[in-house]
Image 1 (cartoon, each protein chain N blue to C red):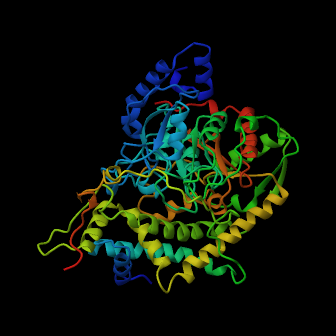
Image 2 (tube, chains in turn purple, red):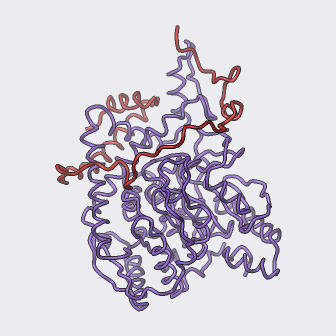
Image 3 (cartoon, each protein chain N blue to C red):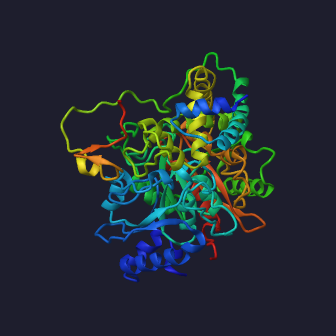
Length: 474
Length: 94
């Protein structure tokens, strides 16, 4: 096996046993990253990796919406062309503090608006399992880079499934922690009540290791929560005897690819054999989650993106006309030239649902249905400790297949959106392949701040199967 | 029904210039998405409180003490046009 196929915990023990060095590991992975990037287009730019002393010198790629001091941070949008981050995001400080080796910035849907990485101003990222297919999104570069061995770890952000759905499409592990578990300081905001940074890794052990580094209270993010952070590696036990796992009937519906349903049902059997108590459960408002999300998330996005106006960040464009240009002309032209189609669509939808006369009918109603969706989970977790279901209704689709149909693209996040609306943690882990050898993901969700049970169930399933050992051939 | 005029009105609120062709396309897209979200009208929300924040957290306060912040030159580094430590924009007042 090549070094770039290994996990962080394997690499750290090789280094400890003096079978390789940090320098040799970084060289091997960086050379892999650069040699296959013309195939995957996962990285949008490489940084000169700095080696420093630290207990966790693991190569990591960073989604292009997380600020690294002095480096470009563009959210894969033309409007941030030339914007250099003036400070490190909280998660970057933590990674640097542990000696993490930052390899570069990773492609994404523009401003994380999308489920396929096709809306990037830099061009599409390709799925390492089949280069004709999307890697999922919006953290498509993060998922593809880990699956292709271009990095050991990646950070992504998840507003409606943007870590878990690409992890599912690329056959890796992706976790969205509880809202408030990881500081959002230095994450360029999309939907502030939904966004959360999380790890994308090759296995569950690495997910726990990376969460250990990035989790924790930060007073610069007033929504981060001041709760003690446990050592998540202690949750890596293969033992689910007596643990109650709920199967929500609303997540096993018509329209799901049959191979996905079959793989998830087999995964349920595996956990049952390991001693888990499997119970039917119900989340009755599931069918309203996508509609609620596209009101709440676009409303927040339209407000967050108001700051990109040609004054402070990168791009400024002026109208082509002779009369004097006003400030408003400059705003409107900068935003016309700087934003792509999907960003414009979401800004307008968000502006509409917040506008006078429509606020109550759309935004306020959306926030109320959000309450009902959250209450569904509260009720379900009275009877079970974890919920499992498919991460996405299908495996990776073809590039271009859904790009002209926004609604059909939105529906690919149908099973991941509820966790963001309810603020709870969710993880996607590999649970099989379809007939085209495309990965299938299993999603686990638990109560808020119970990432330990999340990792515990994920680890038990992973250790009972071999899916996580498969690597894409490039 | 979302018309081209609606799109132009929303675009103006959002400080976004849209071309004629874009206005046609966005009218169709927004119409489709809004039609989909109308399914929320089926839900009885008469006694439901809206959620703006998912966790039971109270207001967050911090001590009011002076601490280091961004340097002027760092904050202005990515600005397109600047003058003596300020952002420079097209004239606002005649």
